[in-house]
Length: 140
Image 1 (tube, rainbow, N blue to C red):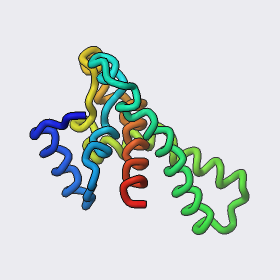
Image 2 (spheres, one colour):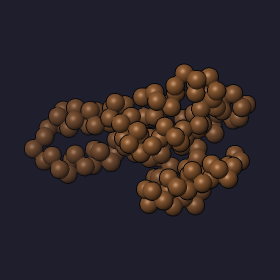
Image 3 (cartoon, rainbow, N blue to C red):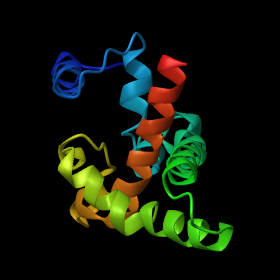
């Protein structure tokens, strides 16, 4: 997918701010492309963040699980599961995405943009998971 110079600058500023260095800037960009934009522009659905989101959900759960396992030694499996579910909930992930400035990075279709999609919990949480997958893929 073509990335304009303006978009490259936005992505490069994001990389710099968070000490990232993607060799594949298209992968980083894809983490912020909502399916509404893909549909409205007749692009292949694989160019949206949805597949990355699927992968990122697993990455997030793995990282949080490892942290909880290593740091909450007296917790039973059920307690760890409950704690993990709270940490990886859309509500919390949405807040992380807002703190990272995702509202300015997400690419939406016109209708979704009009409906305030850049501020929707589900959209920003999904983009956060997609970014985690992109980072995992880029740095593995």
